[in-house]
Image (cartoon, rainbow, N blue to C red):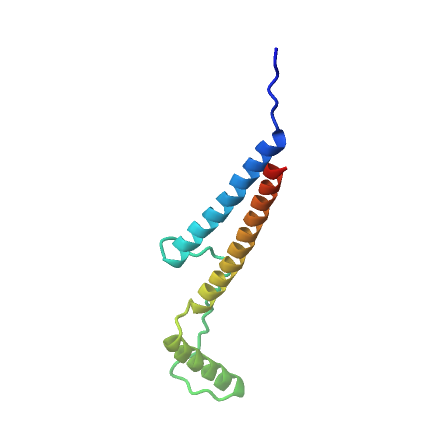
Length: 120
């Protein structure tokens, strides 16, 4: 009876190579879908909008009321210039880009280890 000479390090090397390439392909595909708008950006940051109620017909008399009314007026003007959800979207895209970079780097390291095991 002959036993097959199976080299498990080469098999494990191929598994690592395929896993690393799979991680890279999945990350690139997910990033493509996110940046083309097919899938929403994962929400790492979510800024909740707080509303401040001020009496509208009353003239502010104290410095605190004046400061509060000025702050409200400035925020209203900024909302006209920038969309409300601009900052969270930009932060979420930046975090996703960093995470995708880490995943691609990790996938390349896993594939590199697999190639080393195959050549052995």
